[in-house]
Length: 104
Image 1 (tube, rainbow, N blue to C red):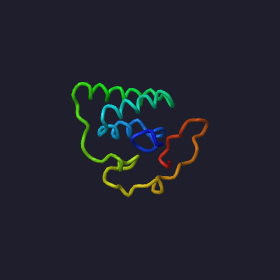
Image 2 (image 1 turned 30 degrees about the horizontal axis):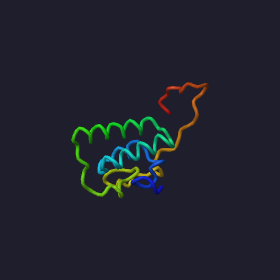
Image 3 (image 1 turned 135 degrees about the vertical axis):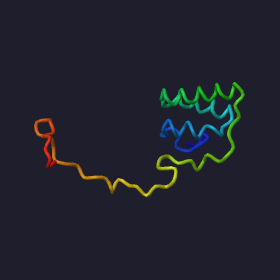
C-alpha cells in the first residue's frame, strides 16, 4: 500500500499497528487514522491510533529504531516450536460428554 508508512497496514493486527506506529511522527499517525476511517474502519485500530495521537499531543516523542522489520507474529526468541509438534486430537466425546475413565 503506497499511501501508508508501512506495508500491509490494511491487514495488520492491532498489536502490530500498536508497535509499528511508535516511531511515526504525528502527521504520519494522523494519515493512518484518516486512511483507516476511509477504508476499513476497524474500531480497535482507530482507538490505537487515536491514543497514540493523544500521547504525541501530550509531548511523547516517536521512538527511535527501524520498525520496518517488525515481526507479524512468532516468538521473540525464535522458538523452534511449530504446529507439527502438536498432539493429535483424541476420539470424539460420546453424546457430547467425555466419559471419565482411567483409560482415556
